[in-house]
Structures are given as C-alpha cells and as structure tokens.
Figure 1 (cartoon, helix red, strand yellow):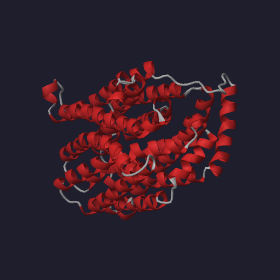
Figure 2 (figure 1 turned 90 degrees about the vertical axis):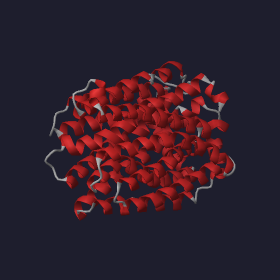
Figure 3 (figure 1 turned 60 degrees about the vertical axis):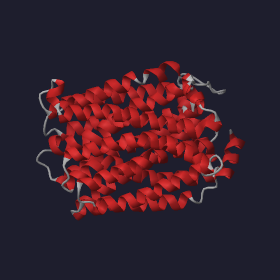
Figure 4 (figure 1 turned 45 degrees about the vertical axis):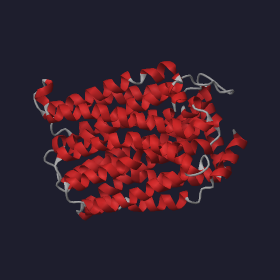
Length: 430
C-alpha cells in the first residue's frame, strides 16, 4: 500500500473518488432526498414524492445507459477518457450548485437540476473507472480500486460531516436557518468536487491508443468499435454473465443508497437520526473498503478472492434488506447503516477490479461503458420499482423489500462466473 500511495498517478486517480463522493453523500444519499420530500415537494403525498424521486434517478440512469457504451468506444479510439471525464464532471458541478437557488414547492425545477447533476456524476464515473487500467498494474487492481472507494468514503464523509454540522447548528456558522444551510451545502459540494478533481486533471496521463484517430473520424471509429465489442461479448461469455450478475446485485446496492433516507422519513423516523446514520456509514465504509481489498487476497487467488468477497457482501445486503422491512426505530436504522457501511465499499471496489480482470485492457473505456451501462440501468429499475411498489400498494415497506429479489438473482448468476477462464479469454483479445 505504501508503494501505491507514493505513486503520483495512482494517488491522483484515487483522490477523484474523494472529490466526487461529496455528491454521492451530501446530495444523492443525504440532503436531496430529505429536501425534495420536505421542501421542494411540500403539499404532495409521501408516496407521490417517493415516485418522483425514483423516477428522477431512473431518467438520469437511462440517459447514461443509452450513451455510455458509444462514448466509451469513442474515448478509446480518440484517447479521450480523461477529457470526457472532465466534461461530465463540470456539468455535474454546475447543476449541483444550481440546486441552491431552487425555491420551496418547485419540485420540478429541483428534479431537473438533480437529473442533470446525476448524469454528470455517473457519466464521469464511466471514464474514471476506465482509467483504472491506465494507472494500476494488473496485480494491484484490487488494492487500487479499494483505495479509491476508501478515499471516497473518507472524503465524502468529511464534507458530509461539515454539512450536517451546518444543518444541525446553522447559527454556529453564521447561517440563518437549516434551510439556508442545506442550500449552501449544494455549493460546497460543487466546490469540493472541483478542487479535488484537479490532481487527476493535472497528473493522470492517458496512454495513447495505437489506433488513435481524431476529428469527426473519431465518432465513426467509436461506432465501429462499439459494433466490434458486441461481437467480442459474444465470445467473452463469462464477461457477459458477470455483467448480468452485476446488473442485478448492484441494482440493489444503488437502490438502498438512493432511497434509504426517503424510506426512513416515510416510516416516521426523525430526519436528524437519518442524516447522522448516513454519516456513520461513510466513516465505517472507509476502513471497510480497504479491508475488503485485503480480504479478497485472503479468500483465494487473484480474481477468485474478489468474487468470493462480493458474494459475502451480497449475503449481508440480503440480511440488511429483511431487517429494513421490520425496522421501526432510529436505533435500528443506525444498526442498518453500520451494517451497510461494512460491505458497500467492498462490493463496489471488488466488482470494479474483478471486471477489469475479465476485459481486454486496450478496450477498457468501451467495456467499462457497458459495465456502467448495466450498473446505471439497474439504477433505472431499482428506484423505480421501489417507487411503483410503494405507490401502488400504499406500503413503503413492501417497496424496500422488493429489492431482495435483485440480490438473490445477482448472487446466483455470479456463482456461475468462471474467473480464471475469463481472465485467459480477456488476455487473448487484449
């Protein structure tokens, strides 16, 4: 680990997770669901605002689904991964800061800025993930991926802690009230995201593709490469199987993250406890994500250990989801937050590093386009499913319980993935 921390490119790459996780914590999981239900959706039924929130996540994810593979192919052929990352990230920053000016009851305006900001956040992650193979050696993929998520939990948690303090005691910061504190928090997220993106922008070098093209030809070359990737996926059956498994279980992970606060509010828990519990998740997630990177090496050979670690995390999620259905008190929500914090970073980090082992390195952005496409398509289905089940049944508990199907199906498919055979197939095409 010390060797990796001294590598400027590895550290600069990992620090971007510190940067963009401010959006994931303060906006995506924390204050946006809270403010959307209680401030921007004032006067609407609880199940209706839940449906709008789920639909907003779904729309943003669907747009990434439709564009990520082609943009990834274009980025590979034009060596544009870093440039695309910067473009999407800046879009997300501007839209996030714009949330601070949306007035009470203007749920549609807030919804629109949120969708744009989420597109920027997720779109940038397509190219951030793809840069993993540019900065890390094959034997370091698990550790470097885990380092990124660990710094993300720490950085996102640190700013979230500041924002929670502003919200809880606005007068200490010279702020008039809690509403103004939340509005200011959106600006701090944009500034934090920008500031800590600078190391990646300045230090990470993207290797040039041997087939790099430029100008209008890059779009055509990207499209042709995308068609070629579909052909490769037919040959890389194990990659295809992993992607299906990932699509299902990461659906459950993302849905829990995005809908937890809304669910807690809907069953009558106090907002202060919900926000505090999310904060605990971040700081539990920091050492846990690093621990999963180490655990993967203990659980078996490279790749195989990562798969076993993911299955362990999915098992914990299944138990946690059942617990959420029966939850009634803030203390139980705290317990749930700690449990999720122990595995959330691990399942994300090991999924990314395992996938990186199964794909040809010279087509990383393109294949990570498919990876993110399925991950974000899961974020279309999951939140929308929770919203629809809650709205149609009038029961928020049934909505959250529906997520368990995704974890079970994802684990079943992942058990069928032959990691060693997949790595050999990827090397033959790389």
